[in-house]
Length: 395
Image (cartoon, rainbow, N blue to C red; front, side, top):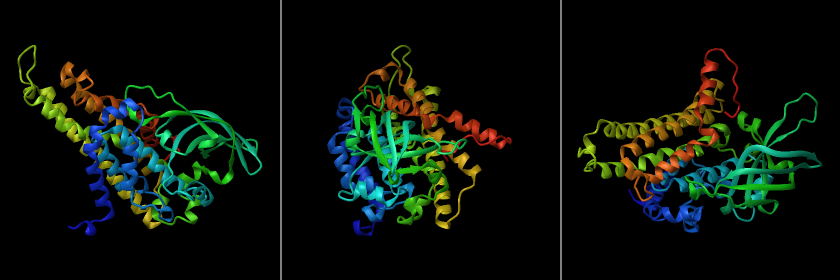
């Protein structure tokens, strides 16, 4: 097959695989910088990775989520921080496509390669003013923030009628209206540069907000201009995969290293070959099976979501609840697998230059994200199945 005959997806996968040697060579630099090297961001821009789910009207490729998350998982085989930033930042280009077109023009009107960071925690203080809102607050964990010129920030809009519920929205704010607090000093995912964001009394016009209920209903203002079916996918189902799927790639990326380290290693205390240790064997088997399981379920769910969007029908709430739990389980399953592999490597694994050390730190760090806690979503699934009310609407 010639390069011209390859599909867009195949070219993206090839480009992601081609980046792996460079990413492996920059792992230490990335951790030391506390953010992605500019060379890494530039290479991802040149490859079109940030445009995978961006509206075609603004230079995007409008690919299915499967393509986007496959690219993320490939990059994670070499550097989970790089994959994490791509997942979180590039998915914003899809979400911006759900906003009123005036917001899309604000961001991409002069430069359609402009990037957006985020912090969706609903900590913003929101006040109604003419034409929009006044926003103030202090948000944490804005991954890739120093590579971006805008930010998505979460806040609850107070009701205008007594007794009505607050309205959760994403607020789109330009860099001049917020400050990045350089406080990213962590022991895992160091390269994500997930700094704090502070806003002091910024005006946000109505068109630069996106209501969570519109994302849930798959009927957002942006659908008036972005008619591709991918913009009819549920926001809650897409975003959560941005913070879970890189763990799959990171786990897959250390399988061969684990074999190389342990195949001929002999225990210093008992002289036994590690390759004959049942625990070491099971750790490897479980890691391979976990990668396959998590990826297979993810792609199956995307197939179902895309089919529904193409047919113009909504996924039923029970299916969404199950898919939400599927996404939350990924990080937990990958953490369990990498921890078993790490322990099987013995005390050598605690050295920073050990082949599994980086993945061990990064996968465990990713597990701490609130969206990757399976217990809340598992209890909701089990409760609903037994007749209880649904307690989650980020679906």
